[in-house]
Image: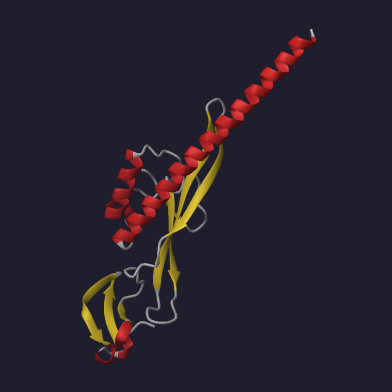
Length: 189
């Protein structure tokens, strides 16, 4: 009788270790997938030098990102932190069921270019066990580099060698001019 009880306990311990190993394996695979998605989003934004968050459905970078999400079958969703814009798998704003969240963060560099921005990205992954389904939701966060194309005010910005470049709606306009040739009220910062 003692061996029968001992065998049952041993069997339960083995089952528990198999479940723990499966959970660890699922978590690490999902984390790796979310990390790759986050890196792809960051690289796409940096290559495009910014996003149009007012109308993400028509933005080319968002289209590339959503196509990648569909190709890799990334289906995890979560809740966006405060002040973030949620984007669903169709490229539309959706804070209830977003595939990823994004926020444009303004930065000030004290020297040449006073107002630029970078983007903060939040991507989700979860612990998904075969028997228990979705148990915990986690986040992977990342930042883009400061983008030179993300000026928030229209006007001339000082660059190297006393040259000023004009920006309108975050885009360069024309060729750089000497700052002394630009009216002082048009220079930002």
